[in-house]
Image (tube, rainbow, N blue to C red):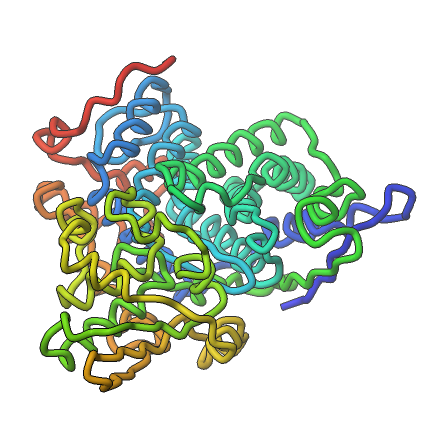
Length: 500
């Protein structure tokens, strides 16, 4: 890997394009290096994972709205929209499928200086690949690039400390991945990356206070914007430049200011793109920093005979967990039983209480209004708080994968003064966890989420096709769509009329 120093440059400085970060990213995307076998396997795992969570979310209202918007834009050859027949304009298919993937907060993650869900790259690349007749080999190469670029940006550039949403790293990664998949030249990719970044910077209010359905739409929007940016760049249209480093660019005005420096690691010429191998998926439908606390609660519940005996629970954890999903956020909505699912998903206090009581976590039942409003749960919930522990923060930011952790220590104090303490560094499903996810677990997750949603023969067909993705010939990527039982789609809610 090559570490690139990135900083603001005045307009009067000599700062040629070859030194721009967008150019460095474009060069990585245009590098014809092949994808290693372990990376190919993980790409397939994550396509399966996305299909699983899309099946689980297919008739939720935000997903239904996005699907109906896409269906208003039929196209030939077009791209598939998850669960339904027909072909649609690729940017709208990317939009609809992106919402389906993100709605339940249940797919893959990478956490470093910034947050990310790199699986958000997949819907846009699949949609464009279907529309243009790309092969499975092309798609795998494109996704390896998209994951690599997003992971590398997340390693080196923090957005959330400036209240910029993490999808500002997603727009450029989708554009770069599309560039690889389509075999575009470096200049075209450079312009597309710049446009995509310029148009996908937004505030983190989408993940603050009363969290709305836009949390699911935000990455889908970034993917759609990136598809359109690539289309414009292919037609010869340019982008603001230098987009990160300009005097009025992203670093100077949205991030740490004109005196800041960032170090972004990127593969050198001929170096494999292996970033996807550093990412990890979720066993539980909840914000990633609550994955280990869920597993910890399931373990600790065996030590407590009566939850009414609990006086208090303090979760000692990282800065990120404390301030984003903990009491450090200052959000009263995180203790509100009538709050939205998206808000409860970002309350580790609620999540720990339910996991402690139930010993399990379910993507629907654990968030149901009747579950959140149980008096005994509310009482326990209000006894839980978080504190930042410098050691957990240090481990969160560690560059050593064997030390990096997203867990917590729980201190449970009983009314009689007894204190029960336990801690868990990584989730059970993490590569270093008690039960790491491999192909078998990805398939099991898909089978579980698709049960009663996708006909068993269609499940078998999809899994057989995706596992031989490398051999899918040009024009054959439609096999990645999974049809949903009509009786299930009939249960989708009415969403009212829009413009389209």
